[in-house]
Length: 121
Image (cartoon, rainbow, N blue to C red; front, top):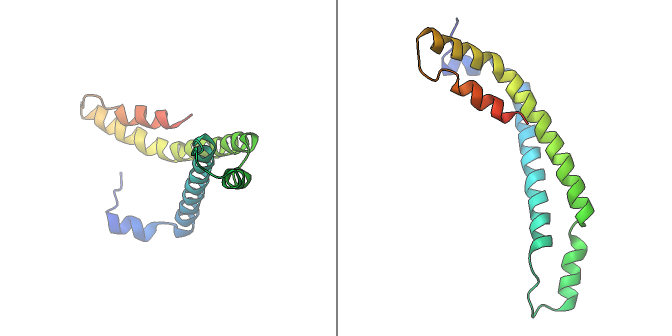
């Protein structure tokens, strides 16, 4: 098997694919953060001495519970697809490494493959 050092790997990378995946991760992260902020805003108790206008204004700018539920479903679907994509891309690499460790007689040679399978939802 041909092994690349770090610099050779970077030179052979398709940077457009790397940047597209990076953008996907950044977008998913932003969507998850936005969703959790909306959840926390809905769950946070109102201060007893808060003016009614402040409470109403705060609730008017947050998502409704059905909107939060819909966003949760959308984010979950996107994360599921992305996790399945990543595990599919890594499956052959992990399987080759597992086989190499099995050939060397290593104990628990399949732990990376078990960990990879945990990523799939």
